[in-house]
Length: 308
Length: 308
Image (cartoon, rainbow over all chains, first blue to last red; front, side, top):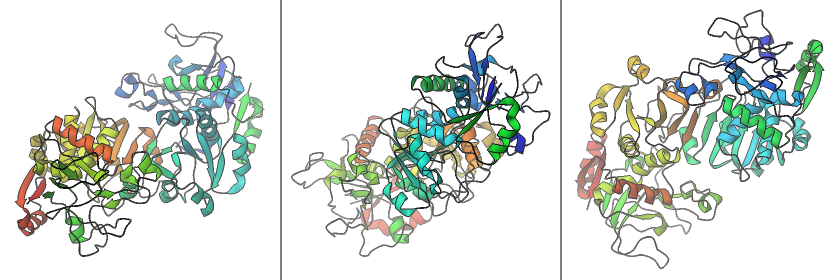
């Protein structure tokens, strides 16, 4: 059983109240030991991966159209959620996990469990918008925020053939950006860095940002028909938006939310085919308290994985 | 020579200072009397149409990629603009008009000049986003604002096969919406109207709105992956935007600016093929002062046309 370090929300309540007892963890990989009669996508002995969603209604328009991650009745989270029968959901900081087979995905044989785990939320969260908005070898993609999400954004955008520029609000990650494979780096507080890429980006993938966020800064980097794709969920709002600014360069702003089951399996298969390797550090599950302590000190470059 | 009633910006300076002398008018139709050596898209005797743009550099990336309406050096407006040689541009409230042939479009024979004129700005402004974001017979499109732009939005969206719902902030245009061909009407201040279309729209075309604008109101109407397409340019900003709201339903917000030459010709050909007929009232050009007076009283349903 493997889980990545994703307990932050539950341990700090950033995303709302936690109903205790709670077992966190929503990027899970383990060997399948039992399946129900109707499960066809995965079998005993396979390695299965689970992301942030454990259940969707499969009856609403969103589910029926294959967008189960946006289930209109509200998806049930992998932990701290309630299934229709009233059962609580528990996450992957555990020896075993049980849930709906439709939200379990086959881990390709070529990928280690430790490498695979964090793809199931951070990976799909960045893969989904890059695919949805057609990032390809002609694209120039700015990845804003080079953390747990952003590093996946860089790896996937490169694998899709794009030119990729890392963006951060200081120079601390300049070297890291290059090690990750970025073609260049922008410190968003340096006018000379910004000027170099004026109207050059086809896409910006916003994976994290600070509350001094300004639309002007990012719109100036986008080409005509440029796309600002947001996957970050800070607890502050984006500032007011000038309708005229949107018009002048025909900008689009979009949000995406993790991925549907179809996108999840496609994503992990693509990652395996292209040999995409996330940057991880591994801890024993029993050493979770040290992992949390290191996490709070900002040490992950870029994901912690807990192993049983 | 025909021009529609589009002098508002220049006569009231809403869009910035006017350099007098100024001849307004940026939806122009007339018979071509002379063409330059290099003009191939239109010939003497044709009827030519002109929209809001009179010149683009044809050298920047945007122009070279066919997005001349977003020319990176700034397009030159049909009136109150300056060409690279220093000449001023003058609009269509006139007997004759002279300009770059690349921004003149052939009016299909089946369409009257009076009907054709207002397509060249209001028409393309609504057609372009509907086409760009793939409105078709499966779409459910809310058209927000039923004025000069919005009425074209309804006509084009219906011609593209969509189900179309008119939206306005009171009931004054309820009957008009149905006469225009809307399948239904929403008063955006009536909770019961809004509830009826919760998560039903694939697209909203925002052609005009008031400063009590709330994202929540419109996002609640959009289905998963819904698209808020803005073509309005009010002098106030859209309010703050919740990143989480964008994510939950995977919303996109986009702006578009009139259309490229390619889109202009495609649009007027499509309008002729489908027999789209705008709602216009015709005045003599010499009666322009009465037209302005009637305009200020809010009488257009929906475009005034001035004829020589």
